[in-house]
Image (tube, rainbow, N blue to C red; front, side):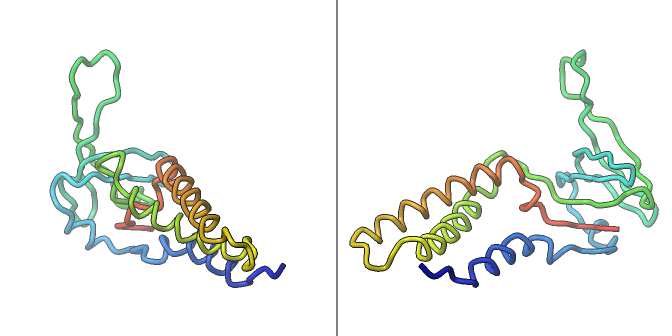
Length: 160
């Protein structure tokens, strides 16, 4: 059985493609964000949190962060002023748990189908069924992985 070399290249390209459009050092993109955009902010000291965009100046990012205290009966937001020189990365956050599931399923189905064509022998009379089963399995696995690791769907707005 022959193993196509392009499968490895396809897999590596699929892993590296989401980071290819990173806006490195582009603070102007941060300033143009819409009010209320959900962000994931990563600081230089490795802290990470979610907040809603309010304002960005040349020196700082202002956003509304949900206070995580169990004693607070209602959701209380705290205004955060973050110095630009302490921010490592800003990404757009997911607004809902199901966001990106269709893309995950399509990518997984494609990868599963491509892998199936290399694994299932061409003389097998049930090849179509086997390819469809592996494509479905790839879609299901990709949706689960995309839900656990949603970092691949968040667009990078700023990166130091």
